[in-house]
Image (cartoon, rainbow, N blue to C red; front, side, top):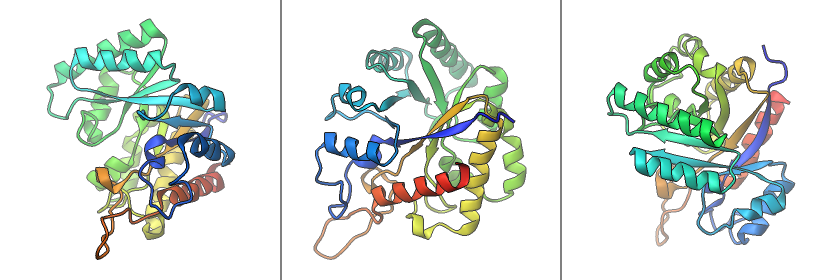
Length: 272
């Protein structure tokens, strides 16, 4: 066990976007939102937002990571270069759409590894639905073929899409090669039937499963510090379930900012 491994709390810019009008952050300009999250103990942000000058993160003392979708080599490498130019601490990659042959994915991974070596930038392959990492077997096979891969573990996609909660102990023991090389986590708790239920609708068993997943990551990872990026996203992109009221447009079901604070509090209780 790496006794030094600890969590650093970050938040996704998407978690701060398109909030419910009743949320206390919803009407604040971006600079004030970022100042407020810093006051709440968040040390970094992740994502790209066209309304924000990324120099603001450095001014406020917030670390910054980006995400890139890599579907074609030319466009993917260009997106990586743009992230490097922004001075990011790391980049999480959604690699492919899940149907590419192994030899093509292997070629892309080699390209990304060469880019990492050239630019001295940490690049993590993210576990995510609709990509080459959408199932556990594919990830384990990738880890065997490319043992240098470092991971962003977003286990909500597997928990929901692969029913990870069923036969949980057997499945979690299979994930050791991923845990050992995980350098970033995404903080979202999915259920069997919903990618992002409100926090007050999550069962005790599901909470226990996520505690175990994140504890195994902290126990096995080679990284001294792992940022966990709390990422609760809007109904507009299919994450929050949404709620409809007569005469009003669909809105988020949850107050995603308050849920983010609740999840951070729970993580702090578990791991600090």
